Amino acid sequence: MALKQNIMDITTDGAARVQDPVYLCFMEMLQDADLGRSFVKLAKGSSAPTQVYLNAQPGYGTLTYGSLATAIIELTLMCIVDLERTPTESFTPLTLSHFTWYFLVPFIGAHLISQDLKCAPNVAFKEMLESADAGDTLHPAEDGDDDLEDIMKANMDARRHECMAEITEQRWAEAIQIENSWKMVIQGCVIQSQVQMHD
Image (cartoon, rainbow, N blue to C red; front, side):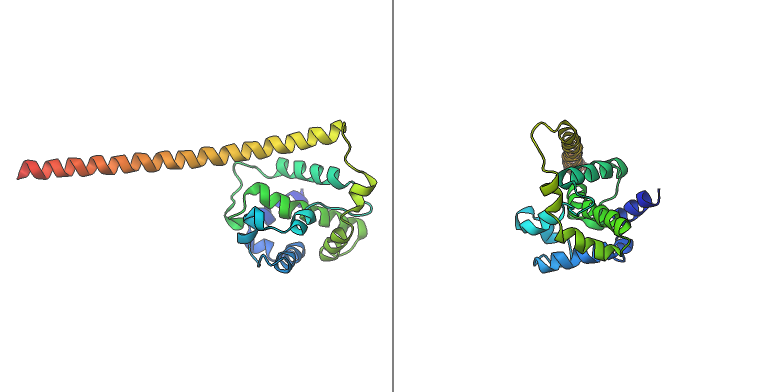
């Protein structure tokens, strides 16, 4: 329960996030990758270096499940963080999916490692980055791994749902804007005809 609340706080409250040691490590990593200390450049996916993408996949000796761990953490997060109701203002211009992938997955990985090693979260974050290949080496994703495929499918469905919600919201906003434009045109015509009638 405490971790769930921590996840919600770190997702919705920018002030709480900047005090988190894992977030500070993440910001340093972005700065080292010439992405600055904000999400603006990271949101432009093509400019995000491969290393930032790879760092979103927690490794580590005793967490050693590589892609499987990443998929499980991501699916768990999607159950905790409501894709439709969670405010995204504190990490715009990233989408919730991108914020989850780039930050929340490694955030959870680092906190699990921190508990396992009984060390500070920032130490755990560095350990996670240094052992990023361990999970896939010991437990490589294989064709026919039904559990992994089911988890990946659930993650893709959740992402698709979020994407469709964003598209619907954009179309709704565009429809309202068009409707308001027509109302203004009609109102202008009515005012003009009233003026002409008085003349």
